[in-house]
Length: 425
Image (cartoon, one colour):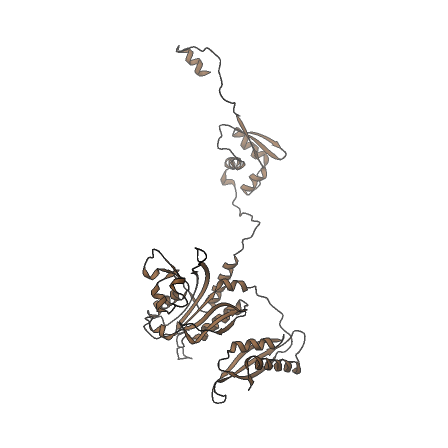
């Protein structure tokens, strides 16, 4: 109307009709609902309803309370106001962000650590307690590493995934074992005057899957030890090197802490010493292996001094299937009965198998059994060895009598004779 008035006043034209509108009428206001409790929730403190209304009215909004909810009429000029949260921002802006106290959000749900992460942390803690330093290596190695360690049979190139554009020839194959990476880390340190080293590593291996384009991935635990266990001291002048039973003891400690019963069985791998290697099983399921690297392979690794290298590799995916929470039981108030037996068996009989047989035939009151003596010599026949075991029996409800324990011992001797051909010494 003002434009038309000025148009006529300067004499450039004359109005000949009233205003004509095109298109549909638009709403000068749009309705947006605002819940008072939403404002207080976002602010983290209670804000009065009257205070909210006052701020919105001052902004030119229409406010009407309906069933506990503010129905706000937003002018069309405020195109930025679309949802409820936009009105919350306006209220808090006028109140002043500096007047809003800092609060800790209240969460209904508590975060849970994934099972694989929990298990990994627990095992790493046990490895540190056993004296291992954690290593982190690349997920690939070179074909020369495979050949140097004599792994062509168990980790052939055909079963490996080759990298199309490797950074170097020494990083051209996705690893199927942690052994090359850990041995290279060991070699690097030993050749730089580190007298002894015990390393552990969690890492993923990649196995080619003929059925799918993507490989099968397993998370493995690698352990390697070589050199001197500790410096000579005033009470022990002799340096002691890592040997097979040191790493075997670490593995036994690991599974003892995890409450998993493992069995060591004889094994044969071309890259391991034939008399110092074992496969590890849990309930007849293969879980890993342990052994001393074959001396011929150690000789060509390029170590500056002669070393005995002990290596173990465990499948963490399988371990998780058997990992369980620690369960505790009452300690018996009654005395423990100890008995020892010595038996003669063939040299090729595994002491671990003898322990399993004792546990199977001993009954429910056997608490512990351990090998405390092993003898090979003139006092036993050729091709034979003597094994002595200590056994501890007890029960929660009363004292075991001699005749009860004698029955257990008789049953154990019978089982050892039937299964292993053992003779009481």
